[in-house]
Structure formats: C-alpha cells, structure tokens
Image 1 (cartoon, rainbow, N blue to C red):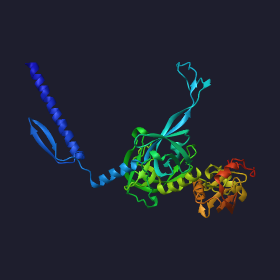
Image 2 (cartoon, one colour; image 1 turned 90 degrees about the vertical axis):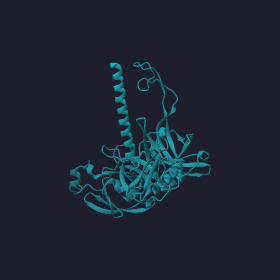
Image 3 (cartoon, rainbow, N blue to C red; image 1 turned 60 degrees about the vertical axis):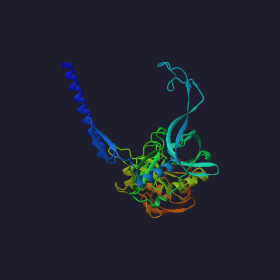
Image 4 (cartoon, rainbow, N blue to C red; image 1 turned 120 degrees about the vertical axis):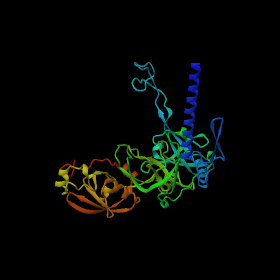
Length: 424
C-alpha cells in the first residue's frame, strides 16, 4: 500500500510539473509572437488543450520579400576554389602513415582539392555563357573552380579576370545551366535605412542560398584593407555598410534591395570583440565599372608613377629635422624610396627621398591618399605633383604610365645614392 501511494504521489508530481512547463512554454510562444492567431483554450479531463483558428498568414510585405528572395536566389551560386595539392609517398617514422611534412622522397602527381569556398552572382547571360561576379579573394590562387547552382548542380567555372585592389573577379559557366541573372541597381542612389538582403553560402555550400535581412547602415564607408598580405592596410575601399549578417562564405554573394536588384557584392565584416552587425559590400556602381574591364581585358589597367614609397613617419626624426627642415610632428605625405628607371616619375625628374605632399592641389596626408588621387586619372593624363626635396618645395608635371609598363621597367631598381645622410 505504501508503494502504491508513493507511485500515485510521483504521478501527481510529474503531472504538475508537465502542466507548469507546458503553460510556461505556451506563454512564451504567445509573448514572442510565435503563435500569431487567436487561440481557444478548453479544459477536458483535467488537461489544457489549444485550438488555433487559422494557419499563420504572411503579411503583404513578407509575401513580397519571400517572392523577391525566391527569384534572386536563382542567380546566386556557391564557388569552390580548387588548388593542386602535392601528394607524397614515404612512411613517417612516427606514425607509420604517409607523411606530407617530413619524409617526402617521391612526389606524386598533384590533385585538385577544395581549399576555400565563397559565393557569386550571375549578372549576365549572353552568347552561350553566364557571367558571374565574385570577390578576388574567393578565387585567388585557384587551379580550378567549381560552381554550384541553386538546384544543387555543380559545373566547372572559367576565370575571365580578377583584380586584387577592388577585390572583384569575373568567371563564366555554360549558359544552359543558368536560369536567372540579377540586374544592377544604381548604388549612388542608395539611402541609409532602406532594406538590404544578403544571399550567399555562409560557411560553405552546406548552407547555400542562406538569406539574412537588414538595412543599409551607412554609405561611402572608407575601410582600410590589406591588399598585399603583409597585414598592413595599404588601400581604402569605398563600401556599403549593412547590418544584414555577412559571414565567412558570404564573400562574393549578393546584397539586394527589396525589388531584387543587386546593390552590392558582399565582401567583408568587422570581426572585433564587442562589435556585431557590421558587414560591408562593394557598391554595385563600382562593381559595374570594374567587371566591364575584366570582361574586355581580363585585368584592370591603372595609372602609375613608377615609384615605391612609404609613410614619412618611418623616416628618422633627425633626417626629417636636419635634411628636410620638418618638425617632429610633420609626418604628412608620401616619401619616395625608389624610382623605376624609365617610369613616369623618372621621366619627370623625381628622385628617391622626394616627399609628395599634393596631387593637383589636393593634399596627400597619408600614403593611401596618393594612390586614391592617382586612380582618379587615366593612363596618359598629366598631373601636377607638389614635392619637397630636402628643404626646397617645387611643383612637377608628370605624364602617367600604366602600372603594367612600370612593372616591366623594374620598379624595384635601387635609387642612386644622392644623399649623404640615410633617411632610415
């Protein structure tokens, strides 16, 4: 009898716990809006039951977004960066298995392996090809490219051209597998607060066609980036800022407006402790200019001076004071360290250890400014540089060459030793 009483008490206790948990969970669902429709409660045999009058319905705004995303997603692809990885024979004395790090006497044929994944956007279907725009860093170093479409089909991609500085690249696939191409919006007309929807493959193709929604948080954001891999910012990119979640694998994917037009190519996010919701995309108007050059030339040809330069703050303070007559706090400008023989600067008479302080009257405060001002011009343009040579200031006209021709002219040629005192 005592055992039966204990069992009854346990049953009653569990019934109370279950009822309490169910009631709490239901209250949470109602409070958070998970259950939208009016519910009717009834008590039957001591238990609560819930009846929902009507199934949840989408608002007109939600229906529009759902249809927009469904259509736009057809043009967003996953891209696999395939690279040749050497396979070696030989046994490791430590594990008995093949070692790729220590003993490698016999190198076998290299196999293509997936080393990175990103996203891309089909923006044109023409002449039997579908054109895809993505980020340069998604395809960088690839020996082969795999493109996975919305329906899961995987095809081979062909790289047309890539540009490190803008972080953009173009590839093509056979047009027969493409069903949709996105049209570009004018990003110059984008306003802060308007809807922004990111579509891509965060963390790889396993999560392909993932969608996040937010707003445009800012326009014309100048974001310092490292373009040569030395972990130092050497270029300022003009980007759109959004709070739509952008994660690894989203790179190269679409940022669209509520009309389904492409307003940007997702590029990066600010990864910093305590910072959330700061993603960045390359504005569509900038994208159009770059990809047109990549389509026609396979590269972006930019003007160049044919110099190597650095920030003035790395120059020894004694040199700045004694040779240049500058105060210790005067660190503005681009300090020339090398001049390429036969390049634009060499032809104009510029020398190593000259300090460039302005281009066409616009001040050069940091080294990034020089590149930015330079790229506002075309190859063959003549610009006016304001320079400081020692304590003397002067203006010099320079006719710009192309960056390619300057590379061929050996931009790393050592400068003539014209100063008795080293600036470093």
